[in-house]
Length: 374
Length: 262
Figure 1: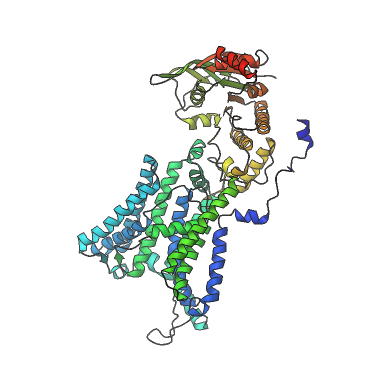
Figure 2: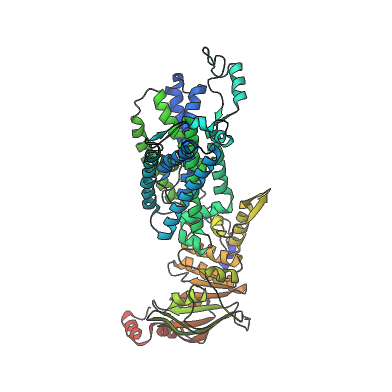
């Protein structure tokens, strides 16, 4: 005992000072940050003259990235809580179709149609979560079932009611509706007019809209994306509930032993994922003016890929919303950038596969560094 | 060492049956504040069932448990934790991917109000974690350090420090040393000693007589679901404890063939 007291306890000779690099390496956002810089460098070098970085071009990839971000935030929190949701894509199609059926076919006021759709979809999310926690089955299989169930209804319902698979006329139905504008409107129009007048962004030089800026505002979709990212990030890192999300995904049994309501956390995260999918769907039908039975196809995988590129572990308990948002940004920039750079678009899938594999390998190594496993 | 004279937990004639299996067949133990009570038993002796009964997971089939003189009625482990009975499991206590301070406050997060919102008070969590760990003789590099980077002994110490910080009066340690090396075991035993000196009752479950003898004040041996009485420190030799645990005879023969090293 005397020996132990004599050694200054603050310096244990066996604990190596960890370098700043290593410290940075174990931040989940690192991969996303490096990837973002790499992707922008690449396209600035090879596609600068293609129009990718003028106002229209920026808005083009920003909107696509924003769509990925909205579903990635939900998928990210759910994955950190230790579960997957493969029904996100079908949920997008389903939610859009319900808005159209209620708002157009049944002629409900648009705000009521949207609120009802949210309530229904979040309830389906809760059902997903409830089945997962009650049966103890992997969420992979439970939500795979819902992938088919929801897609089936999305194709069946419009055929039953209108004898077609696309329902249009949403834009007219949403005209002047306050809640419709929250999803389909644009903000800061005045700023863009001013920017156009200053000659900072492109304006139409002929036609009926001559003199008006080509980009006339920030779509609400991007506002939603930003709001969800901030909400998700603060919830995860700065609140008690965020600690429960990490704990539920890190080790559900240890979390329960410490009094964390693991089942409640997981069900709430399934509901939040469904909420994000519905936001995506409503923004989309407002933009397109129609709902189609094939909307949202493969979105669940794209969300999961964005989250994994963003540094989250597939096994749960570790990840970052900011990382997932950067993953979504990389996703959107590359998808649209290849188009601007005039590269065959099928190569995008090759890129996706390669980057996914790279990200998963990197994350596994990061996990080893954190936990000291060998 | 002065010890309180009224037991904090009294268990009398506890029986626990699972269908036709009798896991506990009449167990009687008193636990006093400030003592380290070692509960020894071989595999299958009923140690796990005993711990779970004491911590409120199982209800006894027969017999009575008094906690602070009152009959104990816990509906689930949360009640037991709230009353001050904390169990530190050998595994399943810590989440390796989370930081020490996030683990320390898991389920008991301190909050700070900002307007209508309440946020996790990381500053306070970090400060308290560093302080409590220093008291236990562990200097963390930083409270952000992931638990995965700690040694097995350090993890046990974090779990013990956590239970003590959140007001445990009775600390049940389920085989805390069984998977540890020599040095780490010594650290955990030293931690047990510190906790006991704070007046907390420690129930130390082990099958290692030497670890028990190192810190125990009293020893109870559990064999085939029954207690074979409780001995004070100094009243019993390690050999006698070992024999009681194993049920005597066979082990004597075995021990001779092994040269008396068990």
